[in-house]
Image (cartoon, rainbow, N blue to C red):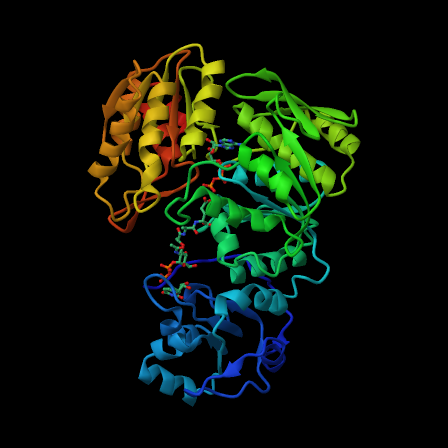
Length: 532
Ligand SMILES: CC(=O)N[C@H]1[C@@H](OP(=O)(O)OP(=O)(O)OC[C@H]2O[C@@H](n3ccc(=O)[nH]c3=O)[C@H](O)[C@@H]2O)O[C@H](CO)[C@@H](O)[C@@H]1O[C@H](C)C(=O)N[C@@H](C)C(=O)N[C@H](CCC(=O)O)C(=O)O
Ligand SMILES: Nc1ncnc2c1ncn2[C@@H]1O[C@H](COP(=O)(O)OP(=O)(O)OP(=O)(O)O)[C@@H](O)[C@H]1O
């Protein structure tokens, strides 16, 4: 299956010698054949055939479905000049392909630790450790994407050219590419960082997932400041226990990876991380009962914005407003500001920029994004897909919505099933009406996923009305029949995404477009403002 991944990479790569790479990383030449490394110049490195450019090394890595090295011939056809893989990868290359590789003099280099060396290798190929920009990393169960966008927004307000890597997109100025993972594979990430250097980006904000740390995707990067938002129920399919999930994230707060950290201590996991971190950390709390170096005090909440004061134990403070719903977004914005202070930006400069612009000027695609107009029910499309995210956003909505709250959501197939009943329960406790629909069933039976969510919702014993509408487009339309002025609909899950994964296939589906059409058909927005 060919991949159609197009990522940002340097436009004018400075080539490096393959021979020097082999020496630096102690790689051996495969006994199975292949050409000599001598005289070969490399321009890039990738592990996906869809991303191979002329002069690249193709890295064949074992996957869950297939060994990447089995695509070696395709990678060479696309311009790869060398292969790096492990012994199993060499075996995965079909015999006729091995012959072609030998005939074309393409070297095959072997190591038994491909993933473990890949980050450093990619950093070497793209020279990303040389004169790196200010590098900021954000981890946590919920809020990483939001913090990364908030970091980038404040940096731009400070006049600092920024770049970002998030679940929603990778971005340099006006140029953006679609993200396939929260944190890209190391080869893609270092290519992105190299492109950012070419484009004279001075500060980079990177979302770092637990999986990225476990799978060495951020190896070869040294973060100037790392931030921790929170930890709650998610990914217990990849990590069997919370302790293991926490330990994966805590790796970011070590001398090997970062100089200093900012830890939100609202959750016990934050308190634990601040106590055990191996690097200097500054703490931040929104809960007044918890001691911290920085404190967030909410001063105003509306359906469209949140204001707060951020004060330090040394007496400094700043008033902040974000055009986003919820106290959780205030916590995210505060984390971003304290990370920038730790990164060397004086708080007074940040305060002056925010005062000049009337707060943080940020747009975060698909995070509590309002897609309705100025009249009628407020319709939020959101990315919440964990019990804690549901609880946070529903609590925020309850404080600012005077009318009814209708929540539409589904759950991921082939991902942590243990959170589904809690998601259903929290939705039923927090919303007045719950409409359970399909999300990404992937290879699971969607009816089974809905049934688990419904079981959870019923277990709440709440007075909320429960409905099941399998088709998301119909669920959105049904939700709109229940609401009017003063009410809100929260569509949690799809966020910025433009597809659904059904029966293992990607199906085009853009929730924000779907909702805009439904609002138009219901007469809540002007037909002229919605494109067909
Ligand atoms: C379960 C898992 O981690 N899967 C990842 C894995 O897929 P896989 O093992 O199935 O790969 P595969 O299809 O067998 O392919 C093996 C190799 O062949 C290569 N290949 C394959 C086909 C082809 O035509 N050409 C080609 O070169 C692939 O690039 C890969 O290197 O390797 C792929 C390539 O890097 C990843 O895209 C994929 O992530 C999937 C999509 C995923 O969803 N992962 C989740 C669990 C994840 O990592 N999530 C975290 C956190 C989410 C959050 O909370 O924010 C994240 O960072 O995104
Ligand atoms: N600090 C927070 N605490 C709790 N919930 C949050 C917080 N920030 C955001 N959320 C909720 O989580 C959802 C996802 O937010 P965001 O995309 O910023 O997190 P994320 O960690 O990047 O998630 P993912 O890793 O799945 O992409 C939001 O749409 C919102 O509902």
